[in-house]
Image 1 (cartoon, rainbow, N blue to C red):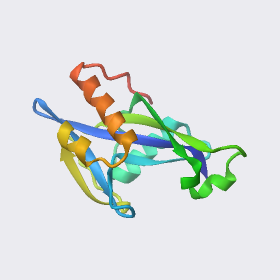
Image 2 (cartoon, rainbow, N blue to C red):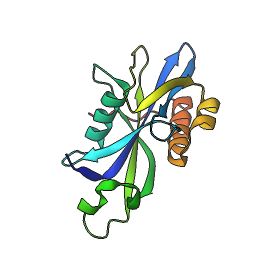
Image 3 (spheres, rainbow, N blue to C red):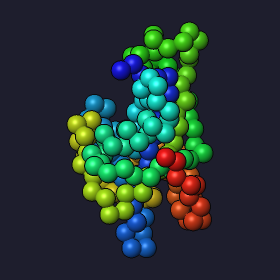
Image 4 (cartoon, rainbow, N blue to C red):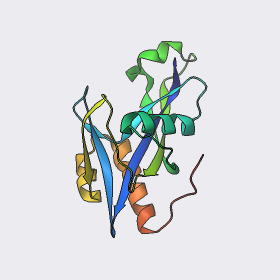
Length: 154
């Protein structure tokens, strides 16, 4: 299915007692640590794409709630192979960010990744390669400290 001209990012977290841990995934093809990331498919909304990417990359066998984050980024279209199928004048694509609570949910990473780590906030910030991932993680961390997660999207 052709890729839509947008990207999604999903930051997984879990509560372990009073602590919060964040999952970072090591990409197989780029050898970097990141959150769940991927492109929308034609006809998908960002929320639908985020749910699909989370299911695929984390091997989830049950639906999970997605919490929309305010963090957005722009990624140059030249980084995407499908850019020639997008409307003329598409030079950047938006990246929409979400969080998902995986407390008591087992994950099984996909073939796109070679490892997963559950880290505290500081360690996750240091591990993540991309600025947009660090910004979304920072927003999620602040929201969790303030007990201010937005309502989940369906």
